[in-house]
Image (cartoon, rainbow, N blue to C red; front, side, top):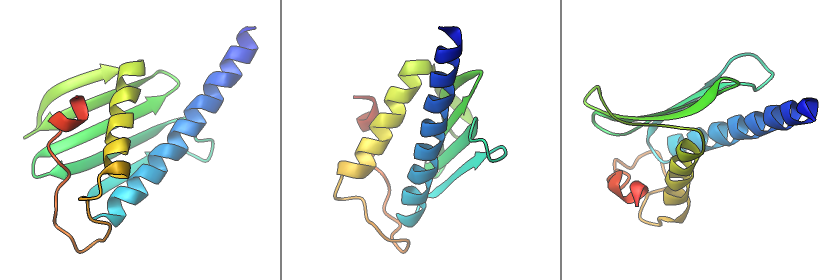
Length: 121
């Protein structure tokens, strides 16, 4: 049973890393500073970061040791979530990008994502 759970966890982390990479690409195409770094080719960890506006940064980390969402403004930590709560926040960000037609889809735009409060609701 434990081997099966370990394998399912590895597959989950790999899927999450691939989705973070895709989200970073979409955000970059829409003109935001975004990145997703992985260690090696095994896709077992990633560091995702996006700057939503001046001084407003979101960092999402995933690894075998855990999953965290950290939101900062002006270099001060506003919120830190772990596990399922962190994934819910990430889903909120992805949904906002996916379903908000007012967010431009080009690199030339300087428009900003709506305030993070809309992600929290």
